[in-house]
Image (cartoon, rainbow, N blue to C red; front, top):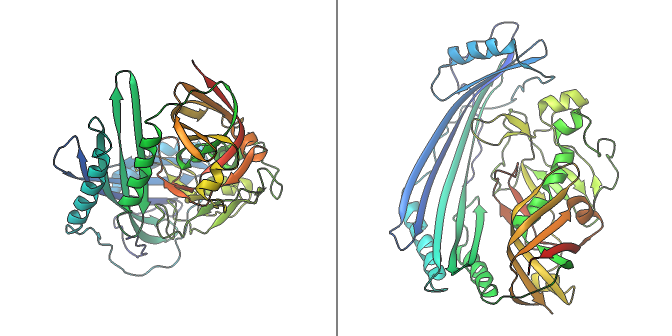
Length: 446
């Protein structure tokens, strides 16, 4: 369902002065969602957002203005006024080369609702059968984003993308015991496979029906994709443009040198068919490409928007994105991917006589991204012996240093990557496999 098109003449009414450099963009985001929860009939929701933004660069300063309502004349005037107090920048604007007249039309089809309804019901009923006290929630969402841009250099372009998201889970409360499970799948072609997600959630629920008691200590831990993605947050911080410009990254002089385990390869991929950020341009109108950030542990590329690229003497690479529709552009990957290994799930569990499996931790974020220390309460943690999951572990805190974990303690990388949607603590969507880390500190409150 992902479609990318470029077109000319998409925005009218933007008039630059002869000595001005800048860009004007308007973004549209539409979502159609169908949700079922608590035995209710499926609820259909449609939402849309629209934002116009102007960025003006003059005499090394940046002026910005954004609004859902104002016209281009007002935004240009506000951006010019903001230049007087704007931040120092070295950025320029893209020419957005190429393009032809192609209309951008939403691909949403109301007939899809029947397929969405069937998927939601099937997954919901499967979860409902886990236990009379289990409370499921299932949502299928179709996202569609359109960006139109013109620049003072004569560039004009527009591009569109659409992708599906299936989210399912629920919780069971038994007295003071709370057991919650959840999972998400993304797809660029059709609604994700509901049965596959259901099978995974049913398995995790069964794992948690028994409880295992362990002692505090160091253990091998399989970080499932949602938390494996969190381990990469400090890595992205060291690769990001602002940290390099400020001289805060310990990796600023490490290009071409090993910084992580040779088993780990990380890429910014703008061409994956199902990628939420795949497309011909980033949010600055810079043409995108695939970039190996870490190749077999060796640092290959930094993550730079146009400003950081120009400050550091690089050509822009197409890695400038907004986290939200009205948010500032920042240095960020397109779609972050970790190259999967060859080990199956059973092989990961069989590497040690006993392992922990972590799928969620509350507060699991780095307090200092440059150092990489992460600790969180394990909200979804399981104990396995001889390849068999024995039960859920409660009241445990997991602590790691992301760089030590991904450099010296990484044992294996699984062969089954999953998409992780962009979130509040994640600057990019990611496709990440499970990762086995040894000697992880686990503190258990008895």
